Length: 239
Image 1 (cartoon, one colour):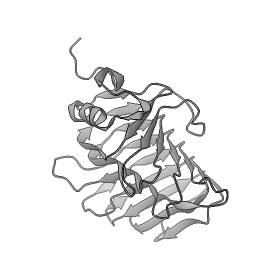
Image 2 (cartoon, helix red, strand yellow):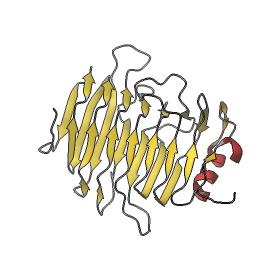
Image 3 (cartoon, helix red, strand yellow):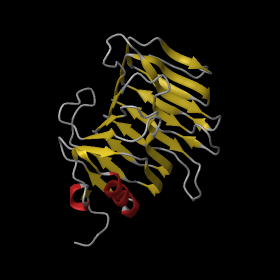
Image 4 (cartoon, helix red, strand yellow):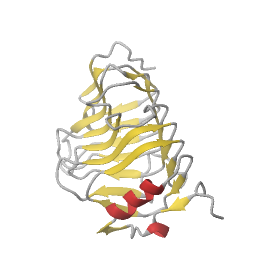
């Protein structure tokens, strides 16, 4: 009964999940205590307001997931909504490997980044082999700097083999026809073999922007995207 690897919930650890209460401290405490191989289960319909970055550092084989729904339908899925200052980052995954994030919605409002995957902290793990599955990324307000998933924007060392599959990226703002930001940004030569497959993208300025690094894209659906691939895209494969 005291096995720390048993699934835990945000509610049991003090998060109100009502969309109005600031749940940042409660959620951060859960991740701070989450062991390797641990699981956080998210309840259908919950909406967690966060006002500063949730830091997930030096973890392996963790799972954060809601109920089994399709990422292309966000109805009733658990959500995290940004309530902090403009230009923030919702989640920072530093040296996280072989972990799964699935079946929930991220609503950035006026944040700049929904998911940052990086290596800028000390620790023994390399960021690698993470799975982002059935996630719904909302586009937020009209923010040209917005990036849904930012992989290794400013750091070094290998950051590789992440898989982004069956996710929905919905970029249209309240003003119909306005397109915002970037879906996926690769920021360093050591970002390698990112897999972007079977996703739906709607209403973004840029799909995949490669400053440096490599990726594979396959069987995605692109709707109202100004530029699907941008930058160094010699590795792009779209089938």
